[in-house]
Image 1 (cartoon, rainbow, N blue to C red):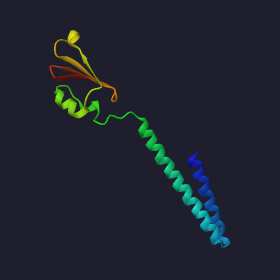
Image 2 (tube, rainbow, N blue to C red; image 1 turned 135 degrees about the vertical axis):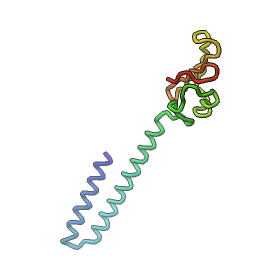
Image 3 (cartoon, rainbow, N blue to C red; image 1 turned 90 degrees about the vertical axis):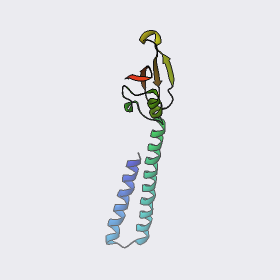
Image 4 (cartoon, rainbow, N blue to C red; image 1 turned 30 degrees about the vertical axis):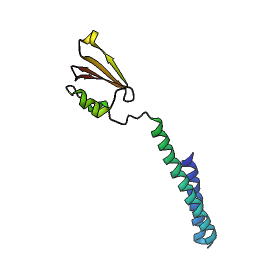
Length: 122
């Protein structure tokens, strides 16, 4: 909608400029230029607000991404790169003693640890 409105304002300004080439009407050209400027500011402001709203709507994890985590890294390195996990699961019964799963909901991933080292990232 903003693009259509901006196109109409630009077209109107071009028509006034063309008329001004043959018939000198500086007041009309100035008024049309002001309308164009307001339309541009409005369009650019609406796009910026739209981008800000879209960015705010996306889930954000302030610390990092699970793509930064590699097998063999220590718990401390993972915590430094990703922060505190959303959930910690004890996998001792299924994977053996010292097995944990750190779930990062914002990043939609899980880090599987065994003896304080990363074994798998999913």
